[in-house]
Length: 182
Length: 355
Image 1 (tube, rainbow over the protein chains, first blue to last red):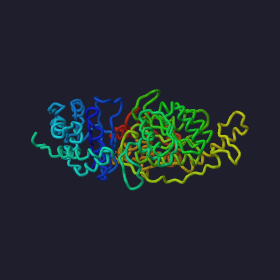
Image 2: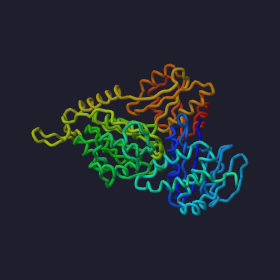
Image 3: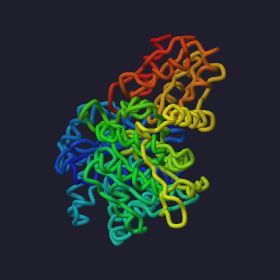
Image 4: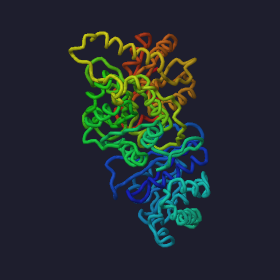
């Protein structure tokens, strides 16, 4: 089995870090995994994305033009990546920063006001990326919150370990969001 | 950034950081470099780590300065390296030619980006010629190692230091923007090679012995031809002892797909797709680009019906494949000019179109 993930948003929203946490989770779960960023003349406020490929066997290709699960944290990424979702795949949309609009009927839309939740429940919009991973855990069923917590531990540097409890809170908030009450 | 770890533990890391960390573990004592995308993380990591370990890190004023600083350090027998990319590696060609004739263990990490000229910062394999044929003057060879995964970025960095010192010859680790920027789990095992004795040539201070001079052999040298013959005997020994490649499903293959570096992952997948269609397709990946595994390709050419060179450039390694195959069977090209390697489905479709 191989699954492809894309996380996209504004530079500064923690898109690459979320991908790194996700990729670490698969590594901890003994999967083959690759992480590849969009890179170029990127800047804060511009768009950025990364691709994570998880596989039981060797990863087939590092860069993909389709994905099974895509998280979009802003409108520009929603516009760009909707067509990249594989038939039957899911797109998790940050409805705080993107319009709730379905243009395809062969994919699963998950609209969640991610930025708003991070602001209201965690009092920190910088937690949006990790909150989104909690949603992805629920939607995909491919990795547990426990593994994500271990992955956070790998990624967050020693001098920032005090932030781990807050990040775990963000993961849970995303995971426990009532996806059926949309 | 993770701490150094040696056995049994995998860490998720960019290829650039894996190269830098492996260089530290290989005992690299001096790094000289000038930043350029897509390899700047190498210098970034080493700028902190080398200082922490009491080793030398110098942010050079130019690539020309960097390669000559490496030459200076290597002449003392030290393990020293620089890293750069494409248009900036062009600036180092004079130094590489000199290091070959000086017989110095220079390690150069070249993380390819688009060219020619200033080019662009996207992945590319456009410096196959630059690395294996060289842009410096005269008859010389550099050992060239081409990793295809982040794990190999680490393992072949170890090997680059070993071979450079074993043969007193510049050795290039040839990665690309995709390998440099992507993350993958990697395990850092202890440096597996023995240390090479250099007390018989290194400039270590002449107290108690005759002074030594390391320099490019000049116009007054009387053994001009002899010197070159000796140099090429060394290259022959390198070919005999150090040629590395990986091949899969070549036993019954009608078609063999040849590729190197990051492209090989997609090529392996393409071969599986073609096998699933009942086509007898194998894969061949040179790990050393010099020495090139010509002998093995020549053997395969006796029973394979076609070779296809798959590259992210306009077709460079295909020349060496053709030389090895020597006209016995057709050698075709599937390529993309620049960027991430073509999708496995594209490669498979193009190969099928050639049959």
